[in-house]
Image (cartoon, rainbow over all chains, first blue to last red; front, side):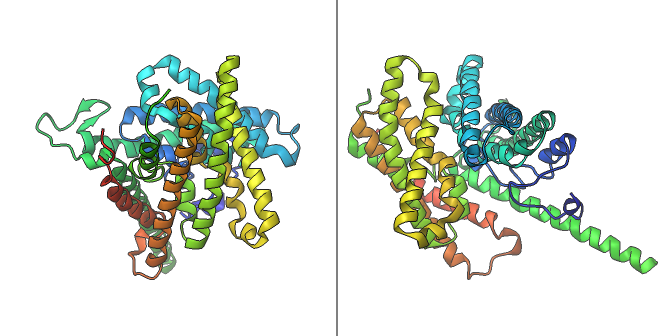
Length: 228
Length: 194
């Protein structure tokens, strides 16, 4: 984990923390699936037009992540190496089927709003990535914690995008009016192009923020050297 | 049953509801592989083949599932069919064109987790398309995917040489172009009539 400390973000699916707690925390922020790894783009762009949808989608994905990570970790010593990806996909598809029926049972309006994107969690690279990179090599408890961390990080990332799109595009936040009745909504942000632009703005500001932090660290290091 | 005409389904999936630019499917490969035109177009052709074949197979599988009352197996069986089709394509390309196989590399097996591929059978099932409608839908959707990949790779090849601000390189530039393309595709809405 030493690379993380100097503010360099590691890109890619294959980060592999040492224990469950570390995995949980790095999934939340350091390796946030939306902002740092830029994975699982389809739901990130498609259903983020309201914050309510984002939270529902994030929780559904988190459920699948925890289930599939736990199961994959349980069977990790039984599965031959050649067929492991196929086995993981079957485990994930089973978890997704469960969550598909669960969401339909809990709330029909949310199920209709998310549409095909609940069954499409099967094809979300975050889930398969975590199964292959972490759950297949770690004990059950750590794998479940990792799933929860990445899931919460994903929910957080979705909600950040959803908040901007809902406030600008509809003038509401979680259904409550923000600007009062005279607000003229900026409809573009509710439409598909708004999704692309919002994510682009978020990514650019994350990079800018990281660079500033890094520059400040470098300056501080130089200053302390001069003083010595 | 659904009584949309075949030409409407084709235009709708190709332009009006383009899979990549207005339904947001297959984003990972769209952002990941659209850097070079030749690779992007060849990968899109492989995706087209997988989508069309799995659409036909999934149509028959769904009829079997409905007859035996086991619809809860749908997602699992669809993904198995897609994985098998991807494996077949991989073997076929490896045998007939080894250099293309090496060029596509890891992205070929990753077609399995391309959500555009899984979405076609899911959509055709929920809309109740007939076999012919499903095939037209699959061709239209994968044509839309190929079109978006082609446009994107053209734009990105040109951007390579231009002087972009440092912050907006990489994913940010790709997403911004995608947003502009998506705006352009919104111009098609209303075509075909309500």
